[in-house]
Amino acid sequence: MNFKKQFLDGLLTKNPVLVQMLGMCSALAISTSLFNGLGMGIAVTVITICSNVLISALRKVIPSQVRIAAYITIIAGFVTIIDLLLKAYIPALSESLGVFIPLIVVNCIVLGRAEGFASKHGVLASAVDGLCQGIGYTAALVLICVIRELLGSGTFGGGLLNGGEGIRILPEGIPAMMVVMPVGGFLVMGLVLAASQWFTRRMDKQNKKKEAGK
Amino acid sequence: MQVFSIIIAALLSENYVLVKFLGICPFLGVSKRINAALGMGFAVTFVMTLASLMCWCVYQLLILLNLAYMQTVAFILVIASIVQLVEMFLRKKVPGLYNALGVYLPLITTNCAVLAVVLVNAQKNYSLLLSLINGCASGLGFLLAIVLFASLREQVDRADTPDCFKGAPISLVAAGLLAMAFMGFSGMRF
Image 1 (cartoon, one colour):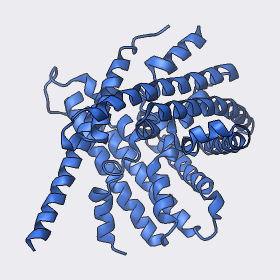
Image 2 (cartoon, helix red, strand yellow):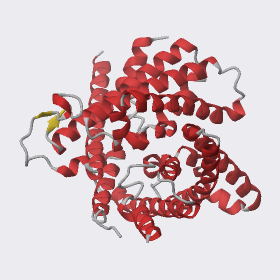
Image 3 (tube, each protein chain N blue to C red):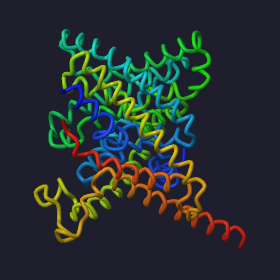
């Protein structure tokens, strides 16, 4: 197993949000402050690792006809655990993410990794895969959160730094409320995707040039 | 009066796709052609209504047994089995509709809008009638959004867009503009 490649795949070349376009609902809906983004990212990462490990351990026991139902039940179990833990220990996060915590059950990233990776690989490799994909998801989420928060409320690290207020970067009056609303979510996501397409195309071209030069 | 405000909220001012960001995956995935979008919209409406009914019963049972914290697990299993049953029923009895919906039926299980509707029903403690109305109206809201978006996309595809915007990015920008139009409904309350 090539762990370095797995990590790069999760973070850049096969980033779940920016390249595979999975888990878009949560990525768009809760990406309004750094606190939300980090919290959601870590929750999804933990759930992906746990469900990947369990599914990989049970991959020879689960009959293939009912595997999707079995996967969903396993994932739902872990999501419920995380949901209850967050409610008990970090109620502020649980409140601000609201219905999107239970909705991790149907987040395509978790099910996608279960079906696409954990059902075919060993326990350790699946755990690493869950971690890498989770980090990729968190990174994309944090990127979008930072952009939306900066343009929408003019702050950085809202909910986390400076007693929950965030550090003000743009003065009042400049930021457009619209960016933290659904409209801004779609627009910012569109622009970030365009940037990432532009970036990957340029990388491809450079790689081709290098190969041609050889 | 509550009935009316639930319907307006689910259809327009709190539209599941464009205002609450739920069900984005099928919204982006199955909106290249209007016909496919119509099929998906109707299938989702049907499953949402049925799921609201079934999950309401299951939720009452869970409350009775003092197991309300298991709602997420219970609801997703109910939705998955409803989708499976609907698929089997349609294949036997209404093959025409089954062929038209095709691959979209199994996809509905992972449509987060369906799970969200039943979770909201449980959270707000709606009665059976209100749950049904909320489920049906939310489904119709999804139908409205996906059909509008599909017709937009058919036009956008013909336009000459910059290279890096081709495909998903320009669709998201179009969705953003559609969401802006729906923002206009946000003040509507009864």
